[in-house]
Image 1 (tube, rainbow, N blue to C red):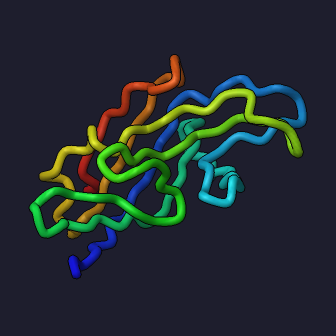
Image 2 (cartoon, rainbow, N blue to C red; image 1 turned 30 degrees about the horizontal axis):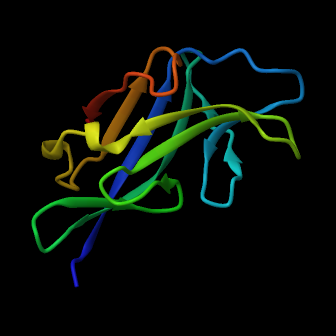
Length: 130
């Protein structure tokens, strides 16, 4: 059975979205709960967690963990905006297949920077953590 490697991952949202009053916004887990994130010194919003990466027997990578959604080959993270007890107003998919494989060495971790939430799949700038 392939072994999972745990990678520290930080999502840095440099511009916070405008949300409806009393709405919740954050990184959505599999139970549809949202992690609200921590404020950064520059006004950003930061989500930090561990991403598990599995190299399958055929050499391809798969992702798993509390915040990973989707089927194999199409895994993603959700940033979600919604009202308590109601359907989501908006959800954004951060596609994990865009994460450069060379950043997954497990030594430092990865940072995903998002400057603007637009569309349903905002552009992500992946960086190795220093």
